[in-house]
Image (cartoon, rainbow, N blue to C red):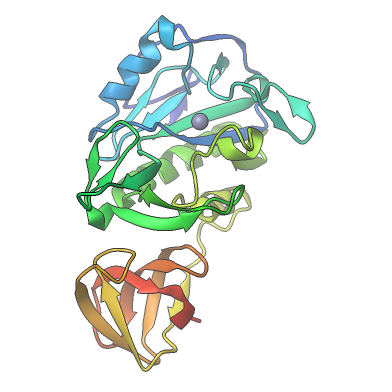
Length: 269
Ligand SMILES: [Zn+2]
């Protein structure tokens, strides 16, 4: 993936009317979630192409890893809204925005299903519990798949290489705290901020199991089926973690290599 003429090569492009004005020397990259469903970005794309939406980020990354661009990187996208970062208002003037397809916060309804605000059902294996850093309230959130995060990492690296003026990656919730919750606590932000600080070649975060027996479950909760059992001293790769809650892990060395699932993070060190 490359950038030519302020556009990613090899992906769909459609100029959104919800943009305008020159964007020169962007200094931050803003991560969003779309609060929408679907495998690819097409549904969101149509929203961003609609003038009535009055909103568009530069790039959309679908759950299946498909990338689309609706605003060129030298044009202001309308993605931040009322916002402030390091004392400077109107972040659209100095940022590139990426929308990541994800429902965000979910509610567990009386039938035991996890649903988005729009009523869409999300499979239990795609749900985690976490507290948002700005309100501390424990909620359910849709997780982000590896295929999507890998595509997002490639887009992020490509943008950082083309626009060295970008020195920080932030969430919409960082520049509009209290008003916005995206990309939220299920998003592994540190994996992306480390791309800016040049630590993208760092090995995966390893943890050692401290409990004598530790169940690996199919979701972030005791109600999910046990997929395997770790033992004290086993090593796991941390895919992401909600401190004090559940960690999504992949077993690397030990008794159940290859198993990916969820464990209580207090038993990892
Ligand atoms: Zn947003």
